[in-house]
Length: 331
Image 1 (cartoon, rainbow, N blue to C red):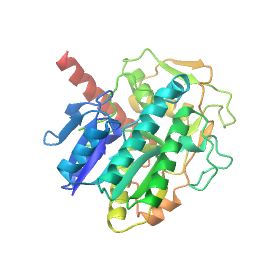
Image 2: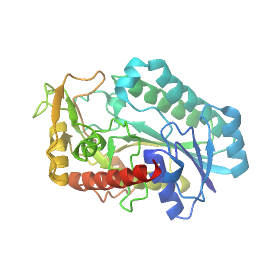
Image 3: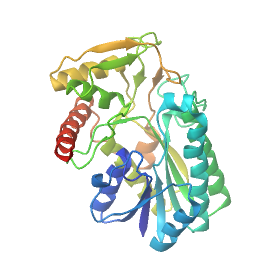
Image 4: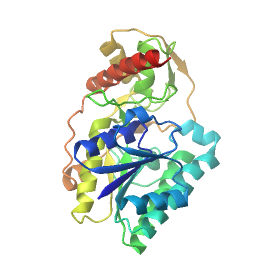
């Protein structure tokens, strides 16, 4: 049984591929390599370079490798960019997902795991936010993901394909074994940017908005270690293979940290007091988003092992140092 991982050469996707290979799974990757890296993957994994919206390519991969599960990571993910380029986000995150789902249905793929986002909630009225809370995305990014969720649910109702939708909160950190991590130099993830500032890769760190209705005025987020997130996907795949019904789960720890909390933690872990600039709010940023995670704990038996902000920052810092050495050697 082959697992097809779209976006498998990217940040979260590469962690997923390593976890699947560690478990002895057959894996094939589809990635357009816009933010992915071949070196981030095990050398024995077959990689197809292309788009999830390429119907003929996707169908050929499913048929050639007898794909029995698709884990779909490939997407555009930067909220402010989605505000300035909404049609690009609807093409990549929604239209391409429709094509991928259709190919899965036609190819008889029984299991589909979709990488969604807490951005579908917008700014929740209550915290922590549960899966049945009102859905009110505040950016084209969130809307594009919600539209893909809707298509997947409708497809599962009409066809023999069961799915799990995983709504990510803020993913951070890196593989504890040092095999992969967030490798895009211009990534906008806060912890990534913070450790780059600590290492002098960036001149400092920007904090966007200090007038939010939160304890210190900065945005509040639920940060989840990428390895725990991947473990949730492994649990979701097992759940589907055991006959589990289609379901949606939050992926978070159920606690929030503010932007200034993260800045202080990065400074403490790195031992560097880097410059911080206060800038205006960014469009599309919700003030506070924290997961209610009781459903995934109960139904998938997921047991997070790295619920520690300092540990997450430490792994991100170690990866950034390793990445810097790699870049220096290849330049």
